[in-house]
Image 1: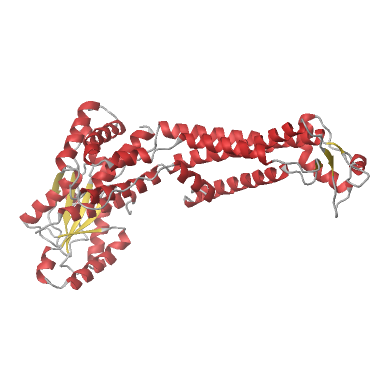
Image 2: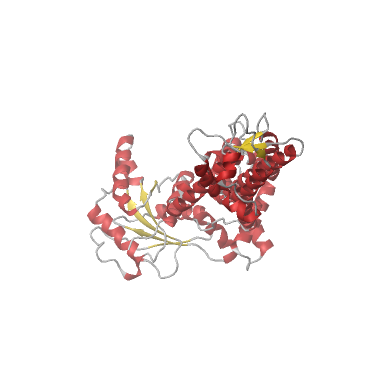
Length: 492
């Protein structure tokens, strides 16, 4: 999918993830969008085509209900014209700012363009350092302070409506969208900003050289040098280093020591005509700034074009896998494995509602026979089916005191049999809540104890009262746990 389609997908994902109360976008709306998109793209469509088409259809219905959503999509669109403005302004600054000096004298050791050369060399060194550091650290690949300013100016920020009613869901969606799109589009944004900065640096140097030659048409500049600490041989060595490559390209020789002695500024020595020195410095600018910056800008521009045309939006988290099943005809297979706890029929129905609400109406839930306390060392072979599983849920009762030597061993055995499927820990709070009604501190303490036992396994517990479940909160918690599980490699 391209950038525009990916932006719509991220927006719809934000709406469907954050509108847990279904105030803005109901379950019927979600099913309609999936069904309509599947009919349009066909059963053999690629997952990204289906997801992109579904987002487009969803926004057609969402737009009239929540005007801030399409406005946010428009506001956060990249302003391509801003880059051209920056480049033109940089050229104008270079054209106007390069002044050789009031008395029309050029000190070849303090040439104004030396500042541009030094700055660009420092930038190249910084690019190299950040590039090497970025191989080992994702954080090092972030934008620098100047790049962040350019990105902020060229990239909009969605406005939020006043809170209240549906606006609360819209606000939550816009916040999530801005954060999610910022992460997803970071490589593209970095390439675009880098293109602007390279183009601006090139334009600034080109403007400075152009201004230098334009003023040289109507003024005669005299070149020479003066120094308190350097003599002519030392000046010759310095100039040979800085201007040697330009001399080799242009054929203009760098002045030898006798010539440098002759053009040293003094009351009776006004220097020589500056044209050869201007040509040498202009050629140095071309070699050090114009050519490298042009190549860098071309590279980042090409990368930005590629990323915009084929946006690398990852479709691996549970939200997208749930959507893709509408075109793949694969139902989500979920296996619940209770430990030391017999799930009552009412709890099984609540659990089924939660799973289907989270993974789709066609999710297939199966509940394994309960593993009794103490039976964790020898789990039966058929505990986890051999078929690919969308989720394995280890089910516990919050009323049980968590023990690493029992519950931890059980989790180790289940993980070993998972076949790489994502695993979550579900804790039914019903019995504990009945027993300690009116004592919320006991609930907090028991939850904390379970978190401590589950933490070594990297599991985020999902607490739910299966007698009277809060499906909105439970769905959000289960989604978060599933996303965490999808990012985590199973322990061996």
